[in-house]
Image (cartoon, rainbow, N blue to C red; front, side, top):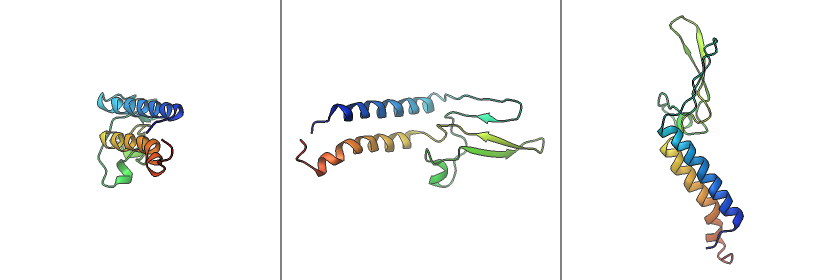
Length: 112
């Protein structure tokens, strides 16, 4: 099965993005921000594990969250763009990327 130049570019970009996302998770890369209004931003650090798949599978996890602080005030948290991304998402999205390229070739063998 031969892949075209566009498919090769897609796979390179797709894999590079997801490898960077995984490295952010592995090295606990985070960007914390406290601007006086207690808005705290996290890029990739996974916090509490939630009970449902929707709460934990990226990009369907909670982007915004809130908690009640020691001062009795409600504080908002921006979990960040990569919140919830880990090994599970890496494997699923890598398989999805390769599936996008190779599954049509398996169904249509005349495009060899």
